[in-house]
Length: 325
Image (tube, rainbow, N blue to C red):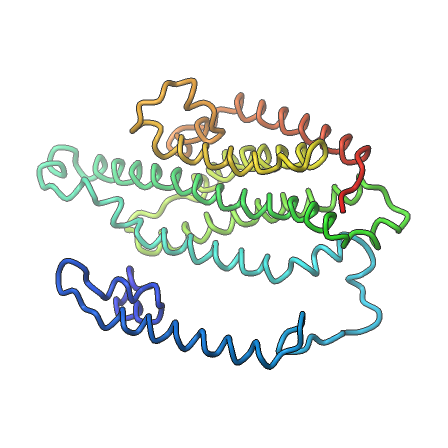
């Protein structure tokens, strides 16, 4: 909000106070003093609250709730109930993020087109084409950014299965007459739906705000193309987590490492002059030209095939291995 509307909004965030120090120009120390005072006050409040609560309990007592709930009937409803707040926050955050990026579409389109010479040589239609191409390239970059965040949210859901398993939270669930395959399916489906929804709402939010500020709106088909192109990459990362959860859960950090490597390759691969085979390691390499170009379905189909194989491996492994905890 501070960047696109009013700089005074920066004062509402302690992180924004760092910007108000105006380092190397005015060197304003008051925001630093405010941060120190806020830190001291927060520490004193924490000490007082900690001294007045019971051990292993909060200051605010949790409502025990009703004895019987529809959200305790099975793993699906229980997972939804436990993740409902986090899911809402993810969706709201992605909507806000998409809107913030969409608000600069008009500025992106005019970066290289302010020259009167360019406008005279290319004409109105040529300038409009360049503007649209610039924005579409930016939309493709946003698709990768949103996909990375969606992968984090979806993989965290599947990873939550191992956390609950190690803490013993699934013991009561496992006593019910249901298979492990059903339990794993619940987490996979919930994670995939959440990741897909986050990618979609972020792109739709960027489109809605971007088309408001732009003179020539971008058609819906380009955002939908970006969504479809990046969805297999999300599925692939989640399938890798499922495979590791089933075979060897201790190696599931490899998913985060692979995601980080993919991010570095996508953003800095060209700057580092990496060979083409190294660039192809990232799933996003195959979709980075979308939506400017059409979708190349061949690599996307291979991603889905590999994802299906990893998911099958994960199901077989999870069904036959011992539970941890």
